[in-house]
Image 1 (cartoon, rainbow, N blue to C red):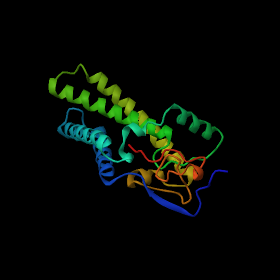
Image 2: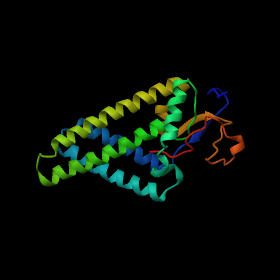
Image 3: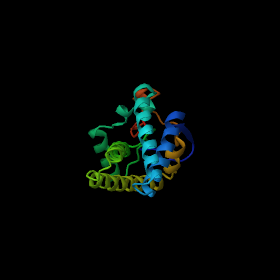
Image 4: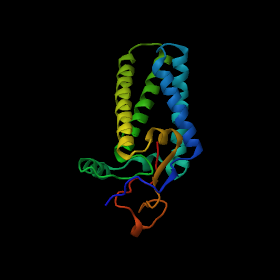
Length: 203
């Protein structure tokens, strides 16, 4: 039987301080870019900050700890299918990092942000508007994906009775104290929980 998120629980740190700081700057810069005028200096500054953060995040994903690895963040189709099956059967699974669907959406968000920064930089340097429809379309894709991600996060918070929005912002997630991952930090397949998923990679 899957565990219920009742006591005892333990707070697991899901990312390192640099990763968390980049996440906060990414969030702040994204919000600034979304609410400022496209051709204004504030919008361009937000875009430049986003670009710098994305580069630093990519580099940290290459040289940083496992929790920062973007390659490890991709869950694979089998894990996504397993989570969908769990959701259809009202099963609970526990991930130190994001769930498989959440991880896939995080990668889509990061990729869309990168394309937005590149198209915006190209528009700023060329002073032409030919890329404006593409930039606006990418903005719409990003906004829809972000809304879906936040809706899933809120639903999961209610489903597990845990504030997962705060878990994303703080980098700390409460999980059952006796939870183990067969491919994670405990390295104990015999003690692995049947619904212990992603052992820690985070966007």
